[in-house]
Each structure stands twice: as structure tokens, then as C-alpha cells.
Image (cartoon, rainbow, N blue to C red; front, side, top):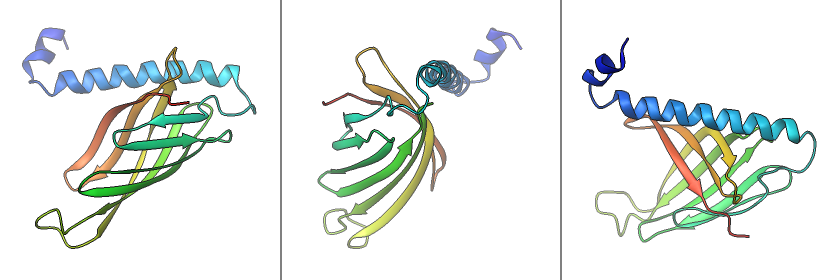
Length: 147
């Protein structure tokens, strides 16, 4: 399939191609970190800023965090391996009083998997995948280091 015929298939090909290329780049970077690591403390250990909160990664790769906004709060837990494989569980509590159409204090749990790597400044970036009511969601993320 030529590049020209791919482009004629619509705009959806380009984002998927970019995400695939991004994931391959992450895999290559994480593999290099794994070869340098071993049973040492997690190369990802530290504190990172997320959209509305902070996530902490321990020396063993355990991820914990929380965030809040006007309409909701969330608790994050999970792990990241020395090779960059991420497993996250995020429990979002919606404050229904402020969000019309939602019941009071509804909770939704999301389970995500993905791959992460560190940039030259120690920031964590990667791709996460999870299921939503709209189907499978694949999204890049960038968490600046805060320690």
C-alpha cells in the first residue's frame, strides 16, 4: 500500500500511524533502560505532575496518586516495570451535585495498560490504553517530574 493510498483512506490512518510509531519508539527506549537496569530500583521512581494532581512512583515501581477538579476526584494505583510496562487503576468519583444528569457521588473504575519511558530531563511520557463506554481509548501522556 502506497503512502498516497493510505492518505486517501481518511484522516484516521494518520493518528493510528503516529501512535504506532510513538509506541515503537517507547518500546525501543524502554528496552535500552531495561538492559541497563536489572534488579536495581525502578528508573521511574519519583514524583510526577498529572493534569490535576500528583503521581508518585516508588523504588519498586508502585504507582500511587490522587487528583481533583471541580466536578470529580480520582485515586490512582498501579505499577510500572523496569521495562516501562504500565498497569493502572483509576477510580473517579463524580460529584453529581455539580454535574447535571449524574447521580450523586457516582464512582467509575478504569483499568489501563501501556508503555512509558523517560526523556532526557527525567519526565515520564508514554501511551495508555483503556476501555470506555465509547470503545477502546489509546492516548499519549506526558508527566513532568516534580522532584
